[in-house]
Amino acid sequence: MADPRQSLGRRAEEAAAAFLVRAGLVVVERNVRFPLGELDLVCRDGGAWVFVEVKCRQARWGDTPAAAVEWRKRRRLVRLAQHYL
Image (cartoon, rainbow, N blue to C red; front, side):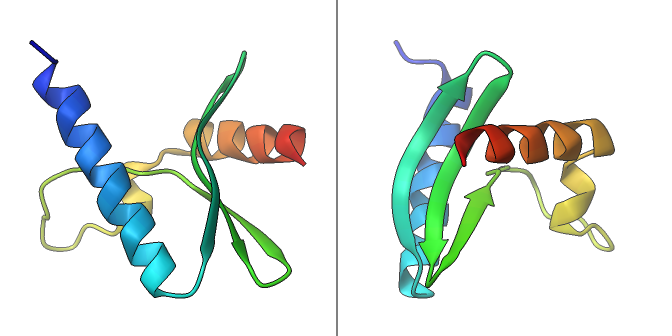
């Protein structure tokens, strides 16, 4: 039986990808793995590259989506994006 967290994560990534496509972005790749980590979604918005970290969590008043990604993770995502490009 599949891990419920993995299943929830896959559903969250599907929902995020569908949202981004409806917003006009093109999903180029999903779950791109490097030794340093993983990029959940790699998209294009016109001429711009967009790198998306998908998080699934309960909504809390006052929390922003950015609050779910601490500075170390943001730094790693920047490095992963640079490596991808």
